Each structure stands twice: as C-alpha cells, then as structure tokens.
Image (tube, one colour):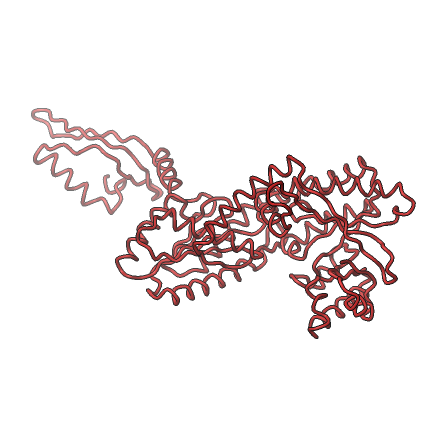
Length: 493
C-alpha cells in the first residue's frame, strides 16, 4: 500500500521512520512530505503520525495528511517572484544586487575584472503609447531572450524594471585595456542583435538600445555605485545619438547632475513661458520666400540662450517633449492663422518638427485636428517634419497616422535625409511630400566630392519619386549656386 502512495525516492526514509516508531517508540516528526497520486503526479501534504498501542493487539499508526498543494504552490510562486521577474523570468533587482555583491567579492579575490552593462531600449515608451502595454511586454520578452543568448554562459542578465536590463560580466582579464575591449566587443554584439526586427502582433518593429558600461576596479565601491556608474554611462550613450555603447568616467557624475537640474528647469521654463519660436525662411530657385520652418529657442533667465541640442534630448528622456511639442504646435498654428489673413503671407508653407513620441501618441491625430480647427490655421499650408531615426520604431504605425492627417490636408517632410536608416521602401510606403537634404552634406559639397555626389543623388532620387526637396543649411552664395546647378528646387538656411 505504501509503495503505491510513497514516491520511490522516499521509500528508504519511510522505512527508517516506521522502524523508529515501532521498535523504539520514537515519534515520527510532523512535517511536509510528498505523496504520489495514482496517475503518478505528486501531492504536497502536511503529515502527522501517532502510535496507538492497545494491550494484546498489534500496534498501529494513526496518520493525518492535509493536502497543502495549493498553498505550497503559492509559497513557491511568492519565493520565485521575490527574486525573479514574472514577465521575462530574469533575476530581478533584489537578486541582481545579491549576485553583484558576490561577484565583486569573487573577482576581487581572484584578481579578475568585473564589468556591469546597463541596457536601455531606445524609444520604448513610444511603443507602449501607440500599441499598448501587451505589445510592449511582448517586446521585453523578446529582448530578454536575445540578451540571454547574446552573453557568455557565466554572465548574469537581469531586468531592473520597465525597459531597463543589466548584464554582469565576470572573470574578465585583469588587464583593464583588454577587459574594456572584451566588454566593447560583447556590447557591440548585443547592440547588433537588438537591432534585428521584432515581429509583434503581426507587425514588424525596429528598436535599438543604449548601453552604459562600468568596469569594476575599486574594492571600496558598492554594488549600488557600480550600477549607478553604468546608468550614467547609458545616459551618455543616449546623448551621443543612442544605439551605441559608452564607458563610465568620473566626469559623467557632473554631467548627470547637470541633466537632473536641466530637467527641473525645463519644467519651470514651460510653466513660465521661457520658450520662443523663430521662423527660418525657405526660398525657391528665384529667391522668393515660399515658407518657413519653426525653430524653438529657450531663453533661460540665468544661462541665456540654451541650445536645442542640449534641452531637446533632456525633454525626450523626461517625457516633457509631449508638453513642449504640443505648445510649439499650438503657437505655430496660431502664427499660420495670422499669416492666412494677410494677402502677402497666406501662401507661405509652415514646417513644424514633431517628435516620434508625439506622432505615435494615440491622441496626436484628434489633438492636431482640434488645434487646426481652434486656431483657424490652413492645414494645406502645414508640413510636419519627422526624422529618419523615427522610421526605425514603427513604419506601419507612422504610415497610419500620416495617412489620416494627410487626408485632412497636412503634408509630411522627412528631415535630415541621408543621415539615418532610410530606404527606398520607406519612401514608397510612407505618404511623404518632401525630403530635406541634411546640412552636413550641404556644408561639405564644395570641399568633399562624396558630399557633393550624395547631394546630387538625393535631388535626383526625390525628383524621380515625385517628391519635393529642400537643402538645409544653405548659408553662402557658393553653396546656393552649386545646389542650383544640381537641380535643387528649394533652399533653407
């Protein structure tokens, strides 16, 4: 009978307990055991035993088993969730910090180097805003799997939360230069794997990541400090254009302090209306003004004019780009509505830059249409500019939003063409009106034959596809005349 309900692995233990209670009268301690169901499955029970002795009769054992399978499963799940991320199955922050502490001890004793990589997806919030958290969770699961497959067997991959992951690299060579080279090589491999397309809910999406790395070389540094250093390096990678890896250096601490202060001042700047809009003219081949691009400038009360290259990345990272972008849109549309009332200005086009987070936000279409109606701006005179890097995130989502607004009368311009990831398939799939030649190529056309060739090729490509084209950064008559000779129809600078 016992052989039927006692798992084979416990037979010997049960025999010893039976002999102990019958031969010596020693009680079997109560505790948790596993019994075997008739179908072979295991059942967790809490078992207690009592020896019953009646003179003249064989001794008996009275046993009470309470099924605790569900409570045991709940306990195991709670224990698992205390150390592992439920979505990806990776170690969570708590287990990460324990393993990082142990890794620091191990590598200090062995003389090997230790590195920590902080991996953060680029523009993940945009996916959540546009496709929902279920699709975002699916992406995180794919990313976790690629990270697991992309590191060495002895390395540790963990998820901190959101779209933040950490990789602990142990047993690196003691030579700092060689260790850094190994970390960079592995980091570049991870970046390449994360750039591969993701099939999410029947749509392909493209994402990149920013990685910060810190090489441990000071036994007095705590796990929190090592992680913070890698985090700072990751933000430096974001500032450098994303999709790259940066190593920590002490100057980053000061930079992070400045960034935190900048984000606080951005909040204040929006509240106190410290931002101003400028309008940079766009002209045709005859020099006639045909439109303008909206440029935002921050007039800080203490620091003076703050460059967009400094505050726009901070606005993107903090999420303030939505508030700032909405303010720019509303102010610019009010300006176009005023032009519309002037017979000499009503035909001017107005180009407005929009971030990827704006364009892919679920409220962007109704919000833009409402602003057009409330301000009285002419939608047929509005061009919304998007960047090439935006196309990596969701071509299908972009096409849907752009088509809806194009039906309302707006046009779209692809900014900084030639610097990012554009392909002919994007130009054919997206409802674009215009492409803009990046100023870096324009500035080099007189000295660099390659830049000149690129500019000429973009102009010919645009014309062949029926797209309008504008050259940006035209600041001298020599550049203007050269582009005119290439067949460029419009200029900005």
